[in-house]
Length: 393
Ligand code: CAA
Image (cartoon, rainbow, N blue to C red; front, top):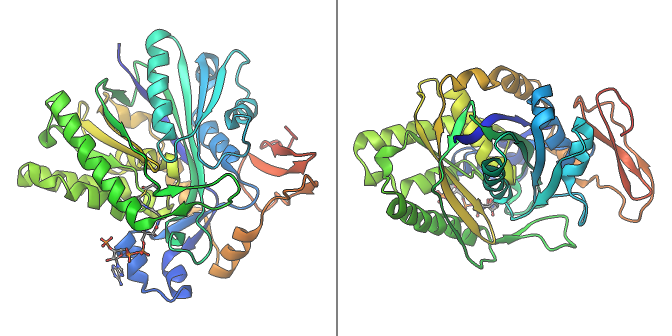
């Protein structure tokens, strides 16, 4: 039985800051951000968007009634959840109006969470062939103003439907993965912002990739020539190039050119959004599929997932006949084009807006946020979400 990605879409908040302007404000050469790091725009989440609303907005755009009928498992990958106990997916389940007989959980392992969710979804569908699983990957990446990681922030969510007879990509069974104790990036429960050892995180990302790639090749017999493209977790788009460079001489010149060309397509959305943590790899996959028009049915795509801390996995997918008909490029491009640029001063102001931590009630001004689903406030320690009909949820 073929199991894989039947639908995939993403959502980003309506605000962004230009990386050239951020660089100037930080007295940095703009080319460090645009070339050295490889980012052009950074998505900014207003206070009316959190990881729940971003995910719900992403899912809203891809689900139809048949999906709603068959989804019996919601897996929400995030490292910037809104509650230490309750799964963020339960809010999304409610906001989307899914049926009650659904399992819902939240999965955390830094940027690897959604990959764990996808593998779990695959196992669930193998046991329950008529089921569909909604996998959500949603985060707001924050290191803090004027920190080393500031240029690699971002916000957004990817939603995927995993099912049998997938219309976009069959996920192959063999994968290689590993876990290692690494303090490269973490966020203590008391901290709003991630802590990071930037240099170590780059080194570990690459050493995990190299080791996992060797294991994958040995266990599958596949090599670089078998891949039309490889998508990477992209904390910033230069990272994908750094990883590809470690292996691209294993094949012919044509293999190298093909993989480098397709890497460019796989970065297009990410360089205009920034890091969305657990959704970044899947945003890169959407970027490749929606921009590279020459990918043929049967093409094998490699996917490298890395979650600091650290867990990494390399797995593969095969493009299905007529997969292009099930993508939403027009809608995604329109969403990105309709975003509003904020100045660095406005971004700093938005960044510093936080919800009360003492249980006091707050009602947010939701008028400026064009999203269909948004956070309207907090009352008695409970987040108040609204849907597009502006009804309280
Ligand atoms: N023109 C062109 N390029 C320039 C330049 C200029 N004027 N000035 C500098 N550069 C280049 C540098 O040569 C460097 O390129 P290479 O990496 O290819 O050598 C690049 O710009 C970045 O320069 P620095 O290393 O000096 O930058 P930095 O010290 O400010 O740190 C960072 C960069 C480590 C990515 C930092 O932004 C950070 O800590 N980010 C968060 C952590 C992160 O994203 N880690 C990635 C791996 S971990 C992971 O993937 C999980 C996750 O999502 C967090």
